[in-house]
Figure 1: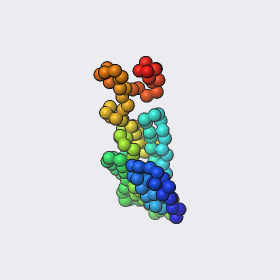
Figure 2: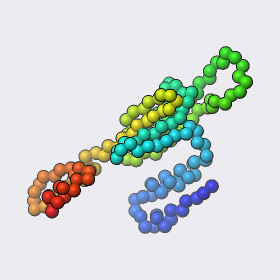
Figure 3: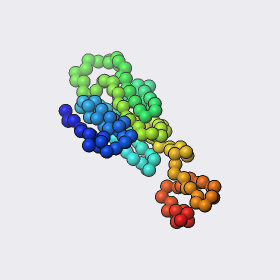
Figure 4: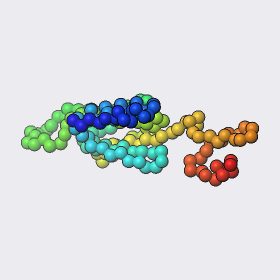
Length: 158
């Protein structure tokens, strides 16, 4: 099992302990169970999509739980009564649990199951209090939120 050594980074950074612990635990807990397969897609600056291949599962079989910085997707297969004798069973009939660590201010916007693919849309919403604000010089007391990538106002403030 590979071991990551973040000691040099831990010596020169402050406040990133949670990030290093998270990376180390992912290496330790990722024991090779890749079921069900999934994709993570960035769809914009603040939009993400997780797609899981869950063929054979119905919406009632899937439980999605989002709490603080953790998204848990669980699938429980029910016992189905077969009319005939099974000669070969090649379709997986097992439950699963997938966990995804979410960054701060990321919330689940919605989930959809179609054609054997579970699609979970995520959006990052940074609160107004956390967004950068312009501070006026020489006693002007107006503060306004800085739009992302707006360099024209910076030239006006100087």
